[in-house]
Image 1 (cartoon, one colour):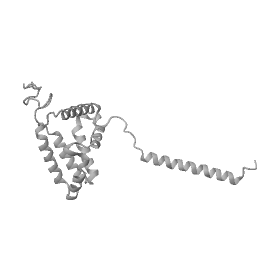
Image 2: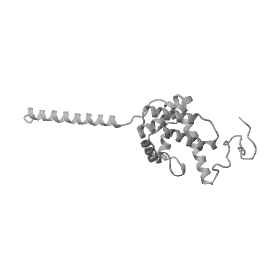
Image 3: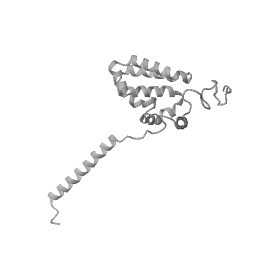
Image 4: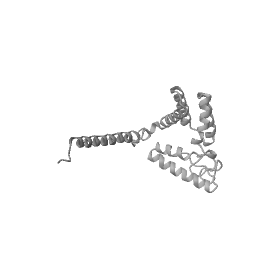
Length: 193
């Protein structure tokens, strides 16, 4: 037992203490940087009747983060998005509504924020108006399982139509353009639901 001295015990305890301190700091760094999965249903799943409000607010918050908007600007933009979400009109009017929405948003933004928005628009839209894959994934995260399923079906249908050179604004397929022209694909009027 001559090899166990006070000095060696002190060094061993100091080394063990330093080791545990390093482990604890590593755990704190890990816990602080790791993202935890949300618990329970999403806000949309819990309140599907408020979908337009929730989506409008989220879109405004995304813009707030990107453009450093004020509270007032964020509230006004959320109201603009909500008004557009709530408006019900035919597909042919969507482009006009979108342009009107952009004009209203531009009125809320400063010149500097408008320039920054133009630079970041590539995140939201790709060539020929396609939505960037990152944006699609973020949207899917906020959807309910039922919405995600409908979205996937609609995406597949659109890809098939594009692959076949299908309708793009002209003749509408089954279930689209109700009550207008060739809605059932046979040239007859579909019964109103």
